[in-house]
Image (spheres, rainbow, N blue to C red):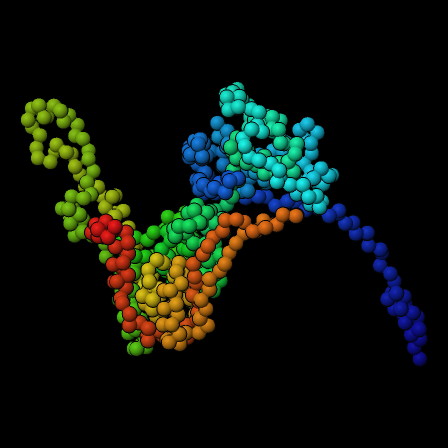
Length: 533
């Protein structure tokens, strides 16, 4: 009988043998969170210069750029390399950044003059804090006699090179009613004087919210040249515009809506921008600072005159159930020998080269026909012309393909009758897709709503937003005295039918004629307008 107790004991001992202890784990102290670097203004970028009195100016940051800001001409080279949101002060030699402040006039306090602090009612409260005091400015009378300084003395201060802050200090010290003012009244008075003697601006980025707000404020709040920011927000939200969408857009507001849509897409998706006339009007798109590669990848322009043919092609495709072969548009405008002969004969692509010794040959009478000008065929210019023509054909072919395949959402913001435009665009919208239509007036959208309701569209909503700004401060919250009366109306809905029932209205050629009359393209509309006046 074999004794295995020793073997079992040794196995047990080997199993229970402990390994050497591991070295202690040393943890490094957590790194302090680094503040995110603010984006800076690059050369060539468009920025919005906001002033304290509510005015907005669009400026392009260039090393040699100049612009007129108020009453002075300033250099725009000081904007390059400055973080967005910075406050800059206007000096004779340009814009000077003020680090450490985000407000325009917060450091121009003159409340510590003569021991008078910024308090309300004489108490220990700080600026803007409400302590229940009842003192106000009801006993003040604006008779222009409280200021002891004359205009001559103020001009002498300016000519002596005194800063704007020093002038404001002098005005406050020579005011008879300064000690009787409340802290809020002092703050308002200081800000009012700072707008005149200390010119400061805030450089903000050209994104959708800032650009739309600046254009709306710049239009004077009463003109119909801009859309209110909340109206564009409703168009994007109810139109279901998101990254990857295929948007059919008709914008008559110089690219404000187009820029907002492109910013929402973020470079993913497609936008078929319809335009009336010779070319698309997109003057305000540059303010959004969109990358050029995003525009080349997502934006396609398509004329209104081509919608009739695209509509017939789409209807034939739906009836036949097969896809039509796309036209090979790139085969046109190729640099062939035949096209080069035609270009030479046209005389449009010539370059002037002065012959050597032309004066001597003119004196000898040996100059021949055609040598006097020294013209020759400019082949690079001709090739550039052909490439431009081919790019237009490719854009038209791409727009036609997107229209035949159908779009995901429809956005209309034009000055034409929506009851004429929208029925012609709905056939290019896929079933179940959303649409949003903006109009400055209510009556055209009411007629369009009745038309779409008879056609069986779903979830039709006619919206009109009432918008008013409020001042929210401790003890003095109240609505602003000036407000926007009306921001237009928006009609939204979802397409659930082909829309063939409502496509019996006027053709898009009628819209094109309206556009030509609006811009005076035929030359006779202005004469008719003068006769009507």
